[in-house]
Image (cartoon, rainbow, N blue to C red; front, side):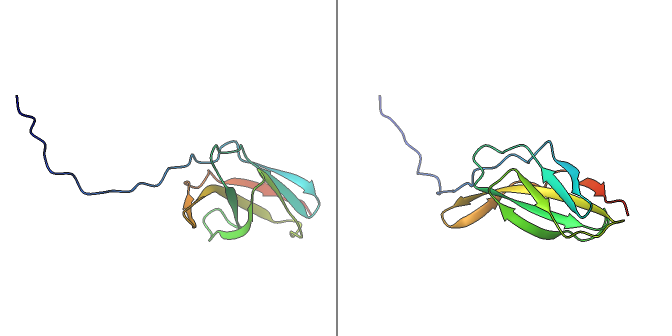
Length: 110
């Protein structure tokens, strides 16, 4: 009738995972701007948008925003731009990121 208890396990901490942004779209907003939009991610504090000028090129951060869309202005006519987005949540002062979305591309005609 005795209860045997094992020693306690070590303490582990986990960061809550965020879903990857979906429904990412890029549309021409003007002759020199592209509006990128995506579906909101539950629990996200904000989003980071990245851009490259070739699909295999290096992506650079364009902006951090709490909105689910962003209009990228002052772009060059005749170029194609490639975008991806990831969500983040701030946990205890540091950002926890989702995976990157799939890449969407949009060209601006001359």
